[in-house]
Image 1 (tube, rainbow, N blue to C red):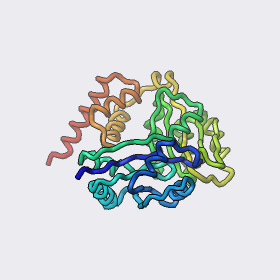
Image 2 (image 1 turned 135 degrees about the vertical axis):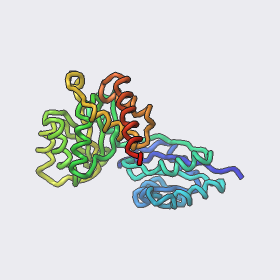
Image 3 (image 1 turned 180 degrees about the vertical axis):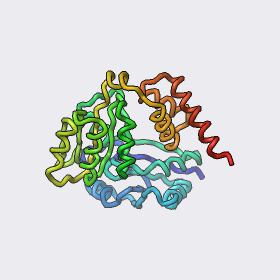
Image 4 (image 1 turned 60 degrees about the horizontal axis):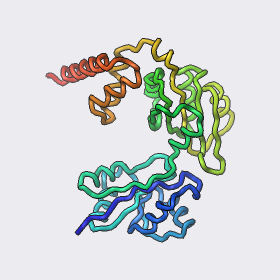
Length: 286
């Protein structure tokens, strides 16, 4: 029996009209819909009169739910995987398992909070990076923003409304209060808000009232003059290399990323990588 297909379907961030004709067709034709939050997806399906069986799929269940969906696909059934409002997609675990088994995967592109926020922010789009959610612990958050202080790319982050002010204050302390930022809240929804200004102005704006909704932070990169004129210590390079490799990047890709971020010669980054490797080898000796 031939296996089915896993479709990765982009659904609206908030406005139900932001869906493609192809996405609607796929959602109608598949045998099962796996949704991060069935309550959110049910509103979409009801709006477009789609009646397909649906199950909940959340990552970090040690592969149990992914294995259940995978078995369904093995039986020749087609499954559509959708996320909750395009904010934090849970699909990579299931996708990796399908790839390992040679199961066909297709993607149905559509809106994402990340790209929509970048576009509406007015920040440079030629070079940008997405770093997920900033660390929650104070020291780790400080170190994170310190590590990107001289990155010239536009940096995009997700943040909880409950932690927004604290994150902005850390950004001000580590990057300087005059760094430009855009805070995009509830994008495409009824209460959409786009704030543009300095970090100091952002703290003043969001500190006077309770913040709600999904938030994307778009941070302007450092100027080329700042990046070139500021010496980068070897400790910062080694720390960033270790972070990148711990996240799953190969040594080669980690070096390439550091060249982009620190604007340093590749040979200098490679030297730091070799020192890091030597240090790790020494630490494992009895």
